[in-house]
Length: 245
Length: 245
DNA sequence: TGCCCAGGCTTGTCTAGGCAAGTACAGTGT
DNA sequence: ACACTGTACTTGCCTAGACAAGCCTGGGCA
Image (cartoon, rainbow over all chains, first blue to last red; front, side, top):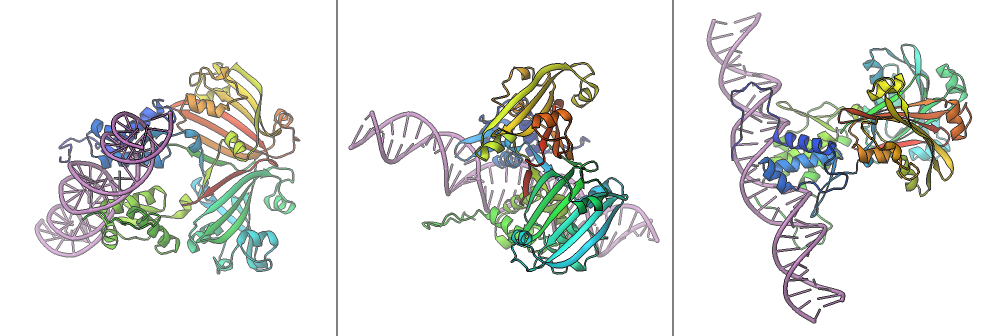
């Protein structure tokens, strides 16, 4: 069979068959045909219905599975997914980019940048021995002169030996570390808490003002890279995200 | 060319060629070959290197792109992605499942479940007119008798007419709504804030205790379904997530 | 009755080739 | 100096067919 092209027509563009199949199944799913767990048409049926080769159907279905909308079981069939499992994926943007995207100016003030001996907690989370050398920075980030984040970070010297040589008023530690050691795994936790006395002072808020605290630990190539405690004044900061299949 | 099978060998299983190509490129990327934005091998080069057909290479590369690790531009080439953009995905699990996963018991107390006239704010976020009927529930969720979440929810009657007929001590509103109206888009915001007087009383905490507040708005089939304000005591709740390419 | 096994279904993966469409660049003509 | 054109290279998408491997069921046998 040969490719069916739309000859002289000036239509925007015929959607690719695999995309049409995908969209069709998405529409039917959103209309509630095939409730979660129910069997959907097999590859062979879709091949017959859309008059395409099986590779094309396979591509559409594999992408839907990657998006979490369907499940496929070899030897059994294709099923509508239980959406609850996939219902929430939140994207956290880099603070620097976020400020720039709002059209504002980003400024950083470095309060601390030195090598220290690792305390027990730091040593454990970075996979070092207690007392080993570790880099420690404390930086406050401003959006148009409003303090937005207090970044308390420890870095494994083995992963970024030149970390302290950086000018953190020009590049954020996150950006630098991404260049030096490509990020390969990260764990987050987000909680609401009160700031420490020092954090309250650096951020210019009261000790009773609630803060959003993000703790992040990244590991690359099996070696811990950095841990960070990011404290944001609750009144000035909002994490936003969206989920769209 | 025919398929190369591993005949009688009892090895676990030979990895599929597309998976091997994917893994190889991931490894090289994590080692810092091809810094962000740099050109990577073309399809043709990978075909020659791995002795596979182009479809196989295409599949590997398309999946890497779907994961955000590479970028491809028609007519130009394949490039290592700027990882900062993808650096943070957070998954939020359903509270009920989360509690069960910890091996604890989930209990809900319904403080309010009735139809009301929509206030201005509620009407706007649900796409209704002011004064139109809207369902309102206020439920506190407990993990082994410890209050973990105060859920203040408004529901569009057009999306879930039988919402109030539900027994929310047996099924969470989220689960019910997912059954009735397949979730199709959601927006979140997360912030730290102080609880209202009523929320503090219901959760059994002080008015000065910081809380993690999640606001969620879901839309299905172009029609708003529900908005929810989820208040968690900061001392008892932690959002966790991880990112792994 | 209970067990085993052979079909017949499903999805998983691959091949070898093809045309379409976007880009970059060198060469040509004005 | 500038605009155009052809060519080579890239990714995007597709086909027709094949074999592999997992699952289920019904028929035959002990």
